Amino acid sequence: MAAKAGGARVLVAKGLVGGDDGHARQFLTLVDPRTGLPACYLLAGGCLQELNWFKQQYSSWLVGDSVVADGGMYLGTPVDPLLLLMPLLEKARAQQNVFQDLEQIVSMADSPSAHLLAELLAGSGQLACLCDVKQAGGQTYYRLNDDLVLAWLRLKVDQAKQWLLESPAAAFSGMDDLGLTAYVSGLLGEYLAQHWQERLAQALDLPEEMPQPAHPPPSSDWDAPPTEKKVRLDPKEAAKLKAAESRQANKQAKLAKEASGMRKLSSFFAPRPK
Image (cartoon, rainbow, N blue to C red; front, side):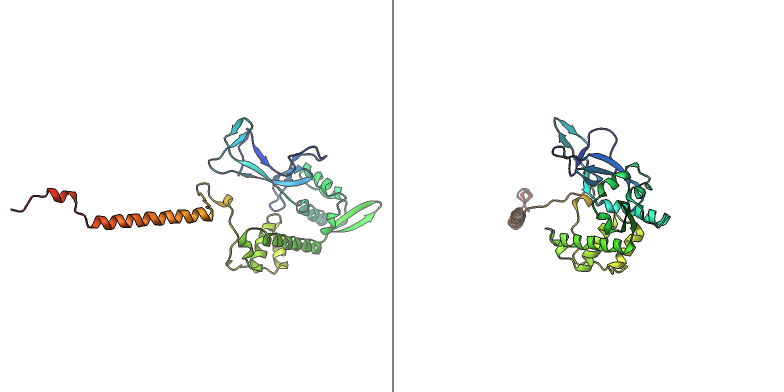
């Protein structure tokens, strides 16, 4: 959902609160690794975050002494910069199929902000998760390796599955391994081109047609239509409400029973038979 231009906006993201930590805070335009279209990201606290716009119906914000009538907000979610670099690594390999340094690789991007990916990853050694690496003349050179990519993606799936199983959401613990693997693979697929999604599914031995899960993952309130209201009650409050409804039903039944033996008021004014 797109935000309206102009006016104050609310942003919730990592790295916005606190003193100067030496990291720049700036908005970036980078290519979405799945769609290939420009998308907005935030770099704050040394953390790259994708920005999503969310708005509930009938909501507003109190900011200082003013009210932001449009209750929407931007949410920053940390994203692995390697996922955004994968399309560039593929492009570099397709064009020359030789080892290249990181600056050469990011120079192939259409976005001028792509050089910040090189700054985030420089010296971290993370590219060895995806690439064959060579050292020459004090420089480091990389070339994408598909086997390493798939091993890295499978590790991400395993880590996400473990996190979900340990999360408070009971529905995840009730899912079987196949269903949970497919669910996590779908989440990761939001950051992968179609051919990588297919290769990952094959590497995970996922069937083309998934059976209906016995325990589907919990739905998010954000997925609900704006007009739909979800009301959650505390178990004690729910019990009280149920008891009150039961008492009301019993009272109505008792009144109806008593009323069945009573004469109508009009019967007292009916003419007497001659």
